[in-house]
Image (cartoon, rainbow, N blue to C red; front, side, top):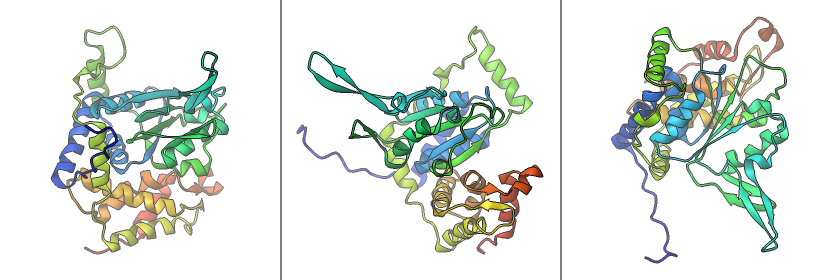
Length: 331
């Protein structure tokens, strides 16, 4: 075989095959990540849409387990970075190391060179280190010592942050928040789900980690890239696009919202709605798909006015009222 031969063209996975493979990934990850169906759906939606995810929840709710199970189900590489105040940008992207034998610098690639990157407690590191991910998230490349290196797709950043502890943290700037396709809120499991989880983890095992051997590898990296291409081809009617744009535009004039979502919010909403349609087994987007994914796609793109924060309202509360007022297109 000629080493210089062009790679085989990508053939998008579409239709029933796309929906079936997405369902298979969800089923396998669900064997380890018990309960929290909405959270799992939103992670799969981000994977299909090729977007990054910010996961917010208190420690111990299975965020790392979720990413590890996902990487196993889709047979992709996985790396975890624990963000701390002393973490340097080069600890993420990599750096040049002097080789005295060859008298040259060798590039040592950092953990960002992976398929699934778990940025744990991203708000623990200062802005300089947080920004090391911006280039990778936006352009799928990393610059080290003036040289650019392409990341191998699929590439998905899943960043976590603790909403309770604010001391010693560095809130993500709006420019970086905007790079995340979705902000996923993970809450405590139900009592029944927690009982199932405890039984599964504690049965005959001394360690507290979950056994991922039951999660089967159902896809590969190239399958994911082909599924992302197929998701981007899901049909969206002009009326549905207009609905998504009107929702985002309403955040800019809504009473109680100090800062509304920008055009990237409209793009994110339509991209995520396409993936939502795939999970529902359809090859076209409905207004319900847009409404279903609107909160995860927009909650991190708006800033509430101080008076609403004092009243204890959340971005989801405001978005709920907004969605009730923006008229959906008639079928």
